[in-house]
Image 1: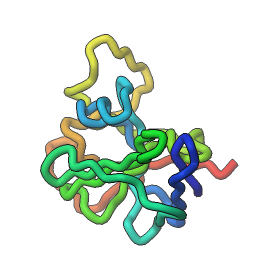
Image 2: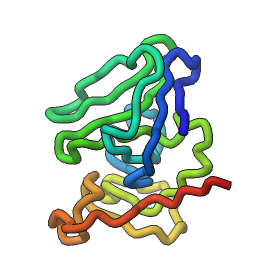
Image 3: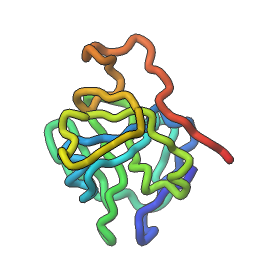
Image 4: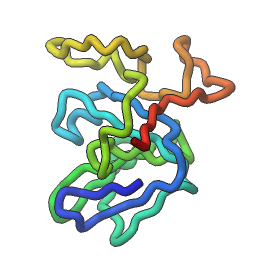
Length: 150
């Protein structure tokens, strides 16, 4: 699975399955992408790589790195120490974003009040999709991604 920025100066490849396909409503993701919400996939560190030059990194808050192309400005990913070992690529940066159907809304308490959603997906408080509804770390991380090869 391939992804890249708008100008294609930065590209990446994902070898393994996405651990999560999530819609995030947190202010940081919204501001990075200039969008009312963002969708991303979580990929284990051992299952992806940059194919050319690496992107620029912006430390948006303690323990959070956000990447972007230094040429066209496209946001590409974020990494959080709270969800270590996983890179989160924005679905829109993938060559075939339609193959990554979100299955969960996170940071739903930060959803913009005018945004009306009727997708029926479950919601979580806070951005960490690896926790259950009570905020405890899930013993077994469920597969949150619906990936279609068709």
